[in-house]
Length: 151
Image (cartoon, rainbow, N blue to C red; front, side):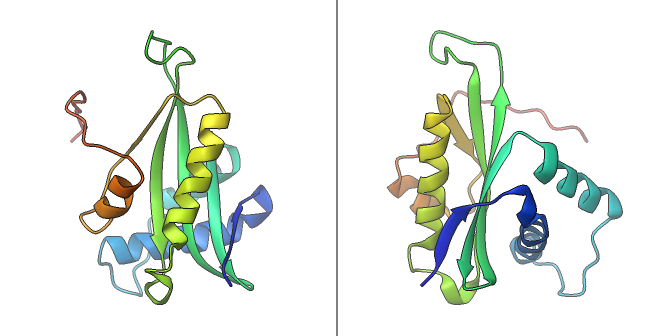
């Protein structure tokens, strides 16, 4: 049986390992790909000091999935009186554990905890394969947002 729980700073190695594994899978990188030191160092620092919450899926001692919520505080508005928003990231379950409801349980735990923390809006960037999960949980496409990325 897979256990899903909120990670602590003591889980830093688990969080780093499963996130780097997820990035290889999602970005179709070779197994022997080596990440830049900057990415590893900044990721570790973010897990340890960033405004985030990560959940892990564990089968015994083996980490088989993860999901993270990054918290963002912006100026309060009438629709978002706390100014506290969140962005769901890095939802991942290993192939052999997919289609068992693990990702849904991880995301639900993060959503529930986020609402308790006063978040008024949760956003995410969905892959094509992830969209059905998020839609089943009530996420909808937004036409309100525009972005500018640094090139």
